[in-house]
Amino acid sequence: TILVLDFGSQYSHLITRRLRELNIYSEMLPCTQKIAELPWKPKGVILSGSPFSVYEEIAPHVDPAVFELDVPILGICYGLQELAWYHGKNVLASEKKEYGHAFLDIHRHAGGESHIDRLFQGIADRIQVWMSHGDKLAKLPEGFEVIATTGSAPFAGIAYTKKPYFGIQFHPEVTHTPQGTQILANFAVGICHAKQEWSMEKFVDKEIERIRALVGEKGQVIGAVSGGVDSTVAAKLMHEAIGNRFHAVLVDNGVMRLNEAQQVQETLQKGLGINLTVVDASEKFLGRLKGVTEPEKKRKIIGNTFIEVFQDTAKEITAAASGSAEAGPIEWLLQGTLYPDVIESISFKGPSATIKTHHNVGGLLEGMHLKLIEPLRELFKDEVRALGTNLGIPEELVWRHPFPGPGLAIRVLGEVNAEQLRIAREADVIFIEEIRAAGLYRKISQAFAALLPVKAVGVMGDKRMHEQVIALRAVETTDFMTADWYPFDGEFLKRVSRRIVNEVNGVCRVLYDITSKPPGTIEME
Ligand code: XMP
Image 1 (cartoon, helix red, strand yellow):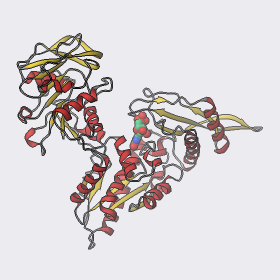
Image 2 (cartoon, protein in one colour; image 1 turned 60 degrees about the horizontal axis):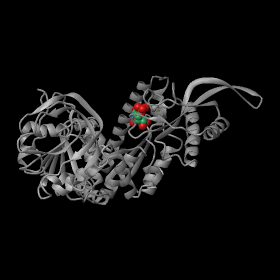
Image 3 (spheres, protein in one colour; image 1 turned 45 degrees about the horizontal axis):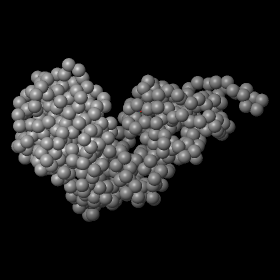
Image 4 (cartoon, protein in one colour; image 1 turned 120 degrees about the vertical axis):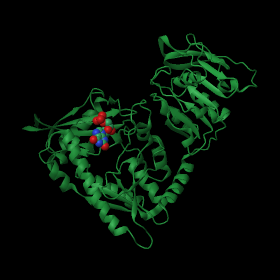
C-alpha cells in the first residue's frame, strides 16, 4: 500500500486514482494522521498539494514520524515544500504565482547508479507538466540535489542524497502532465517496490471474505436498494457474501418512474437472486406531498417519510428474521457509500475545521443500533460499474443514469399528484426510449422529462387546446458539479416532440432546456 497524506489540494484524490489505474493499492488519509496509529505499514508515502503555505502559522505539517518510517517519500507541490521545510525551512512566497503548462527539464546526475535518477527513469529530457503554486524554495535544503527545472522554477524537482525522498513542484496526478502517471509508477513501483496486484477480481474475493469475517457465521444485514448502480452492486456483493442473511428493502415512494418498482424487483429478485422486500408506501408519500409546491419541502417530506418507512420495515424484518437457529439478529446496515463521499469526509479542510462524519445513518435507524457496513467505500464510480459487470449485473443497470432520491417529485414542478405524475412518466419514457434508439444513452450523463405547472395554447386537428408543457433536459458531465446541455440534432428533437404531443394526453408543447450548470442545476427543482 502507498499512503497518500492529504493536505487539502483539489487534486489529492487523483493521486490515489492514478495509482489504482496502475493496479497499485493506495489509501489517502488526512495529513494529520498519526503514524503510530496506522494499522499497516506503507511501502511509500506521497505528500499532496495544499491551499496552505508551509511557512504560515496555521499551516498543516505531517507527523515527523513519517521521516522515521524508513520508506521512500514523494512530495508533490506543497509536499515538496513540506519536505524542504522539514529539512531546513527555506520556503518563500514567489513574487509571481505559477499556474498552467510549463516545460520541465530533467537533470540526470548520478550516472544511473544512485536512487536519485529513478524518479524520471524512462522519461524524456524535456516534458510538459502542470504547475499550480504560489510558493517556492529559497534555496536547496542541505543534502538535496536538483533533478528538474523549468524556466521559472530552479527547484522544480529535488531529491535527497541520503534517503529516497523526492520533491516535485508540478502535479503528476493531473492529465495535463501527460507523463505524470509514468512518474508516479516510477515512484511507487521502481522506488517503493509496491506490487501491481490490485484488480477487480481480487477486490471481490477480498471484500467477500472481509464481509463474512465482519458479519460472522450467523450475522444478518439489512439495506435499502433503489435500483441505482451503487445500491444494486452493494446488494449483490452482500448476497454473494452471505446469501439470504442479507435483506434488501425497496421502498416504493410513489414518485418512481413508469413500472420502475416492478422492474427493479424483477432484476434484483429474479435476475440477481437477492432477498428483497418491496414496500409499497406510495399512498403515504403522495398523501404527505399533497398541496406542497416548494422543492426543498418536497425533499424533506420524502426524506423523512423514507426513514420512517424503512425503519418500520427494518423492525418487521428484524422481528421475523432474527434468532432462528441458522441466523442471529440483524446487526448491520448496508450503505453504498463510494470513495468520493469518503474523501469528502476525510479530506483535510484546515487545522481548525472539524472533520465531518459522512452519512450519519447510525442515527437514522433509531433504537436499532445498527453498525454500518460499506463495501464500496474504496471505489470510484467507474470502479463500481466494473465491479457490477464483474458480478453479473445487467449492462443497462450498470450504466443507468443517476435518478434522484426525491424522484419525479422534483421533476413535476409545483404540486405533485397522480395525474401530473402520469404525464411526467409517459413523457419521460418516450424521451429515454428515443435516446436509447439513437444510441446516445451512454454519451449523455443524465436525461429526463420534467412537467411544468403551466398551460399553453396549441392546436391539434381542428381543435384548440389549452394544455401543459413538458421540458426535456439532457446533460453531459463528468462530475455532476458542472454540466453542459446536450446538442441534439433538430430531427431528433422533432421526433421526440411529435411523439410526446401525440402520445401523452394533457401535453400540447415540448421545450428543450438549453441551460448549462452553472447557472442551472441538473434537476429543475
Ligand atoms: P443538481 O440538480 O444539483 O443535481 O445539479 C446534481 C445531481 O444530483 C442529483 N440530485 C439529487 N439526488 N437527492 C438525490 O438523491 C436529491 O435531492 C437530489 N437533487 C439532485 C441530480 O439528479 C444530479 O444527478
